[in-house]
Image (tube, rainbow, N blue to C red):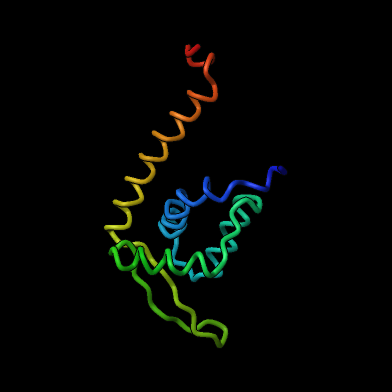
Length: 116
């Protein structure tokens, strides 16, 4: 397995966290999110529109995101922005991720953490 091939089940739980993080930095449209994730992750996260948009719609239904349409270069694009509720959800997801990451590191690092 190359370093770019990561089990999809490992990625699925973190996608919401990653999208909320991007949108906490600036408003974006779908393709922009896909490209930004791909670039920042050195091609590890390569979302398809069929995966992205259901997640965005779900987050919008939960009140974590709002969307609006804006014309740019002769095209109307749908932009997404994080809400106050979305920022709270992001902070909660970051804490969950930190707990998970620490636990996995302790198991994988065994002896480094005093576990035998």
